[in-house]
Length: 81
Image (cartoon, rainbow, N blue to C red; front, side):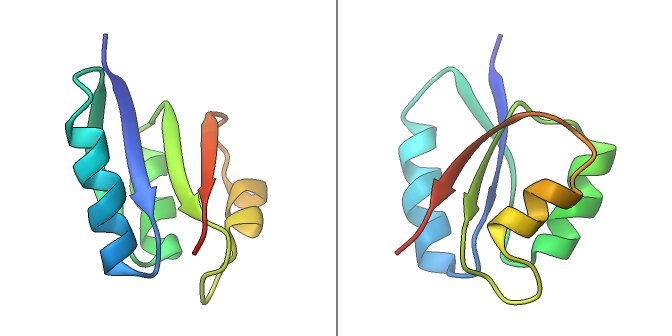
C-alpha cells in the first residue's frame, strides 16, 4: 500500500526537490503539490492523505496554522529553507 502524500510550499523549487525525492521511493505516491495552502486545504478535505510535506513559513497561512485548521488527522513533515 502506497503512502498518499501532498506537498505544500510557497517556493516552487522546494516543491520540485521534495517531489523528485518522493518519486524515487516506490511506497510514496504524490497526489498533488500546492503553493497556496488554502487551495491545498480544499483538496485534502476531499482527498484524504497519509502524509503532508509542509513549509512552516508561507503567506496566507503558516504550516502550524494549517495543521491546526485541518480536520483530517495525518502525519506531517515540516520543510523550511
